[in-house]
Every structure is written in C-alpha cells, then in structure tokens.
Length: 92
Length: 419
Image (cartoon, each protein chain N blue to C red):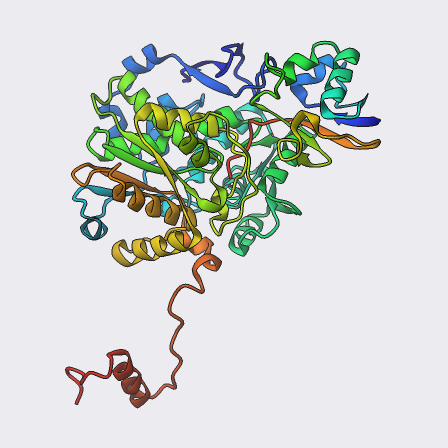
C-alpha cells in the first residue's frame, strides 16, 4: 500500500526538508516502520520506549485521529492520506 | 527590557532560542518561556505594579515581551467582584467572581493571551496573524490585529455562534469556517502555519501566548490584597488557563509578591466534552480524546493539547474537577445573571455549575474563599440560552392593556397603588 505522509517542521530534518513523503504499509505501525527505513530516526520521534504513540504526537489517517480508530493497528489502504501533527496547539 | 532567557521543552528540558517555535524537535513536547527570576525579584514590587496603568502590562516583568507594549492598552485588570447575593444563596461568605465578561476589547479572557502574542508577533516581524478558534480567540485576534495594522486570517469550525463570525469579520479579518470540529481546525492550522509562515497566535506563538493567561491569576492575588484564595474554579478547554494560573501563583511567591496560601485549583468541563475530567476521575494521566457535543462551544475541545498539565496542576494543588450537563450550564448562567447581574457565556455557566457541585460534595468548604472564573460574555452566545428565558409579552400601546397584563403577571392579586 502506497501512501502520502505529511511531515511537520520538527521532523523535516529527517526528510531533507520535505513536507510530504511517500511510504508504504498495511497499518499505521507498518507505515512508521517504513518511514524509519527511508528516513532513519523518525520512529523514535513518533513512538515512545513502549512503542506507543508519544503523548504529544497526533497521527491522522484521512483526517481521523488514529486514537479514535485502531491506534497503531489502524488499517491503511492504497492512496490513503496520513498527517503527523504536533499535539501542542490550540486554545479555543 | 526583557527577563526571558530562553525557551525550554517542558518534557525533556532541551533549550531553544527565543524564536517563533512551539514544539520540541526531539520529543514534540511543548516549549515554555524561561525567565531570570532573580533579576525579576529585584526589579518588581507591589509599589511598582500598583503605580502602573490598570491593564495586564502592570505585570510586564513576568511576561515574555521586550519593549513597552502598545497592544492591549485596555486589556486585563477586570473586576474581582465580591459576590454577596450569589454567596448568600450558596451559603458562602467569601465568594468572588473574576469577571472577564468585561475584558476589553472583545469581552473574554482571550484579550489577555492575544495582547501578549500580537506584541510578540510584532517583535518577530510578522505581518500576518492567524488563529484556530472556537470563537472567542477569533474575535480577540481580529480586533488586536486591526489595531496593530496586521493582516488577519481566522479559522473556526462551522456552527459557531453568529456573533463570533460577525465579531471577527467586522475588523476586516478573513474568516474561514471549516467543515469539522475544533480539533479538525487545529490540525489544518498546524499545517497552514508550517506552509505559509504566518504567526498563529495559539500555534507557533503558543509559548508566548499562554503566558498571557497568567495575568488572570496575578490579578486575583493583587485584588485580594496580595493574598491567594483557598479555591479557584477554572474552565478547561485546550488546557491553557488553568496551569498558567497555577504558575502565576507560584511565580508571585517566587518573586516575593505573596506569602503563604495554597489554593486548591479545580477544573470545570461540560459533560459533552470532558476528556480531562474523565481522566481525573479515573486517576490516570492518559486523556482519551472525545468528539465534543455541548452548548458550551467555547470549551468544546475533545483533544486538549495541555490537558495533561491541567491534571498535574489540579492534583498538585489538592483540587478536583467536575462536569456539568447542558441543562446545569444554562441554569447556572441564569443564576449568575439573576443574582449578580453578570451574563456569562456557557463556559462561565459550566464553571459556576461545577462550583455548586464541588460545594455539594464538600470539596469546597463554606468557610473558605472561592474565586469562580468567568472567562467569556453571554452576549456572544445568545443562541445557547435564547430558549431558556421568558419570552417577551406583546401588547398594544394602551395603558389598559398593560394594566391587564400586570394583573395577570401579579397572579391576579389586587394591585397595590392601582386605582
């Protein structure tokens, strides 16, 4: 499954400055592992020591927070749209 | 003169320069302003503060600005009202309302955080400011941007109250509503901030923006005669104001402006959007996001960025938190209006309704002092209560028609003074 992943500024030093990169995988976890193989260092920024999504990272699959779906096991289809967004924002 | 030395990640402690940054590159944690408290301590005094204009800049040493600010000259220093009639109904002698319904110029606590962030946007040289908002922030950013001569784009979820749309567009801001909820707007704006290089007051200027919320706490202490209250009840949406009021109280002690006092800080959420209260009651740090559904739109944030810090501040203070249903919120809005002449938005109704619960539970004792934080004005959210008030009586312009009506309203009793 080939997907596009939008990358926020703090992670772009892993993607040569690109705000959008390609990745592949059947689940969010697979996609993160694929990102790690293409852009080493990214996985540690997204997942904590226990392998869970870090508290201050939000990952959206086609606009839905994966915490509302099946977390890291959320199924990914060809052409899906994934966004990584820092959780720290907002305020009404 | 600025007393900021750096930005620092709250999670991993990494230092960053004083720039428009908000997220730690290492752990994605939030960045926070670091001050030189030793220098502030020797510069600041009750006398100096009290000699200044009655606005939020009277605490400027504890705010992250460099120069003499000219944004927000009438923002802050809102009344702390001794609520005697409401207190009598609740059995409390020392009940206070911190009344940001009359904050200037846009009638909510957001005028505080926006005064600071627009000042900072100017210092950084931005020409366009923007925000993701459920409404109150929108009107504040639009107004302060107009006065500062900055271009302004406002993003809100569809379905916000019309007053907040008109109240932003009137200042010349471009208003964009998004088909989705606040959390969707927030996500989009994070991406826009990255791509367009604008100053989003609550995103890339967030470390500075949130500091403005401390002034709510500074004022409570000053207005109580440089003393801290026993309890403060504060609404929680994204989680900005509550931890910053806790920080304000701590800073006042650290720089020697208040002694003693250990306020319990309580969080209030609407039952239809209460992820922080659910986590508090469960005793966990893990906040599960929710899809908001409440009339309290200004606090309908299902995935609060700073919710984790709200939990920390509440627990550390020995406080608690509760949630209020839409019906309880409306009843509390009416109670506050009827007893104290203050018309709060639903966030304020939420805070008062939760205060009643905390008193009922014995978590707030009737011999203690309590400050209820009313952070926004009901005139912006008429839709929320328009069906809950008595509808007007329509009569012809004839005295006998009024006589008949008055007799009916007086339960048919013989009218004193009527012929």
